[in-house]
Length: 381
Image 1: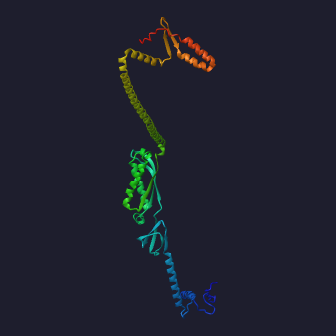
Image 2: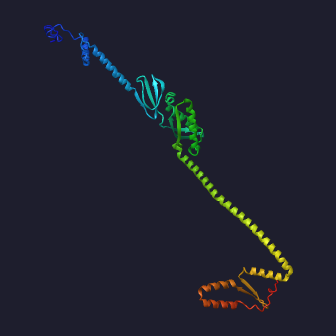
Image 3: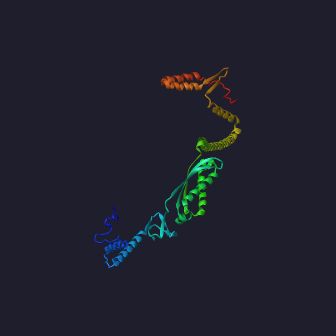
């Protein structure tokens, strides 16, 4: 049965047994009771209306002190050694701070740290069209560093992205103005230098606060569909360079030897000329000395000259011809064979047999010429 139905004797749950007219609790009284309880924590005394004004004032003061301390400590920050801090006060640039322990106005200032010493890498690659209408894939990487923190943050929306776009533009411009053979072989260094210069020219007006430290040309290759043909072409070019180097080395080796032979022939020709001149001068001097003797005794001088000439002639031959007076046969003495046999016999025969052989050969080959009248003795030709 419900409490408010007829016949329930008006059993209201909000009424107390001793107070039948009490209603629900008042909200203001409830809040006032909670405030009095918290005020009692700080030692305040209750007034007749239930408020503790002294305790409330002490609590507010302590809360303010605690808030100030928290605010003061929250403003400390540290800038690392390799960084610089950009100070923004209410969103506006207010200055740059150096590394170290700093303090800021919390909620009024904001600090943006910028790394100034780290060298960063930025790659760029893609298929590009060359000057001779060939497609080549180029991979390049640059290294850069921040030099001006304010320009790096405020000059453009994103300095790194702007640098990346500038690198793509510079790379495609240089590749489009170069031939594929130069890009793949001997012109790589020139391409690298041109890209670096073009990149500096592009980013200069924007004041990005960046500096390009180095540009690395990593790779350049043709599309995979024609890679084999280009490999053959590059191998042929390398062979050409190698053959040229070998030819140059051969020329460098041959030329000095040829010059040496020419110099030697010149020296020999000069020596031969001097020798011939000196021989001629000696013959002339000899003739000048011989002429007075010939004028004094012509016959004796002529015979002496003849004998001297024959001595020189026969000294260079191993054959002796003997013309015996009264005979038609001419005797030939093979002295070379005899001397050869004699020398070989000395190596094999005893000393006594060698001497006997020499005496026999002497007796058999040396005719008695003491009594003949040879026409050569007369000094006639």
